[in-house]
Amino acid sequence: MGEETVTALVVRHLRELRGALDQAGFETTLDHPHGSSPYLRATNRHAPVMSETIRCEHHIVDGDAYWFFYSWGQPICPAVDKLLAAREISRVIGNRAPGRPHE
Image (cartoon, rainbow, N blue to C red; front, side):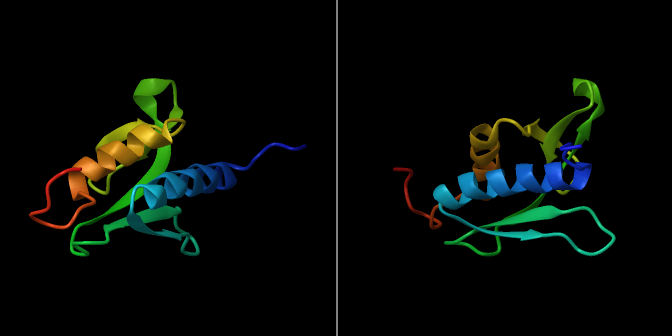
């Protein structure tokens, strides 16, 4: 008893990543369609066409630990490191207005 289900654990990791991405200035949506795995959609507020779908799954290369993955299947980082994941996602979809220098 008291054990977190796999789905609840994945949702918790995605919610925590959502918080880190929200603080970094992204717009995020967490979705869990019936019969499908939960996912997080992160969108650049300044360039809405720049977005990415993030999933959280076991990574066979890391002792089956949970990792975040891009939509094309590339691993981002272990799910325990939300700040690193937010930085890596930011490198892919940005979080500033186009043409605006990094602050």
